[in-house]
Length: 333
Image (cartoon, rainbow, N blue to C red; front, top):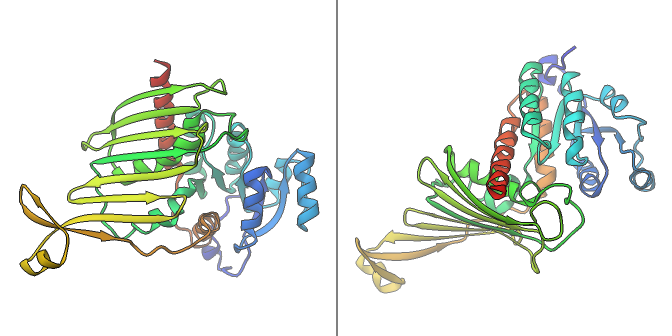
């Protein structure tokens, strides 16, 4: 029987039962964050004895013997396991009429992602993809601002870590920026050029991609997991405006060129342009501190409870995955 929305059932006070699948590095973070949501955490499943010990030592939450048993016991699942397991766990849950939150990337292959999209529509369940940077305060600060970038420059750099090396740097790191760029530009991809190098792993560890969209916007993105420093920045240029987002520092800076009166010309920094004098105005939008993972899980909860659309649908996860693999194809030549 397909799970209906709780509002339709007239049981708004009923807890939504959730199972956590995967208690690795990120799963542990989700475990903690779930304590700050309205979900009823029924149990967890992870075959790793170390993960099981962590749960037993820190939480009074049952550990299930199998993923199937946990899926059967809940209304929704939070899939934070290794990428290669996402599809099998998600399709089981979806086909049983269970809602699913799936960490990025949505799954290992485009074919798997397309099956998940189809199953989600057929079963009419809520499936949200964990593209958490959409909840970063830097990007959230732009929600009421008109953003129509013509050029985007992005750098996502991190030092070497053994985690995430089961996939390429495009699926591990760059996919965050691919999702953001696809959302910000809102235009079809026209052309992709890319270069990448395998340094430590058998898949690219550093990559640069130049993406041209049909509306003329160009995004130049670099991702590296072998850097000497951490950096997560996105810079956007549009008509008379430059927007800089720092996802690590959670800061936003907007530099605007505005028309200037004679009085303003005396009191503010001005420059001469082809269309006359312009005033340089630097704006620092208010930043609201948050826990991005708590926020995305809360949105998932609200989508189930209120029977509304999820904030990051499976279709968005598929688009980001398709672009990541297109970049990988360009690198292979």
